[in-house]
Length: 151
Image 1 (cartoon, one colour):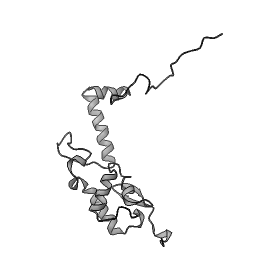
Image 2 (tube, helix red, strand yellow; image 1 turned 90 degrees about the vertical axis):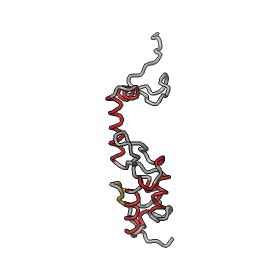
Image 3 (cartoon, one colour; image 1 turned 135 degrees about the horizontal axis):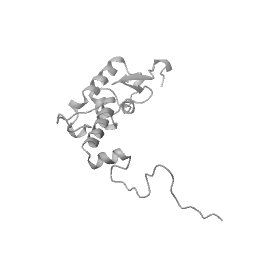
Image 4 (cartoon, helix red, strand yellow; image 1 turned 135 degrees about the vertical axis):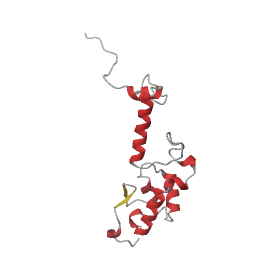
């Protein structure tokens, strides 16, 4: 590898997220909330960028193609690969990225609380939501246990 050290960008900004320029394209794209390993591979192929190339060594044209591919991911991926296969309000398949993903998650939890369903009540009380056991795990607050009798 006869690369100079100063020709690498350590931060590449895509979709309002600073990505690590020292990692490969496929690994760096997973730094965007809502993009996993499989989606990152699809985005890299769609942008015609090598998945194993270092992100910081890409030229501006390749990075721009990556930005466009990330923005248009919902249109090029099948509906089962999107993180919102059927949006609650529109009924359309969508793929949320970055802060939109976090806001949608909070909205969903607030909707569950508002309609007073079982999962919403569990969220409110800070208990396990997905059916895990609670007899011995997930305990918070003051410790309760067996006390030894004083002599």
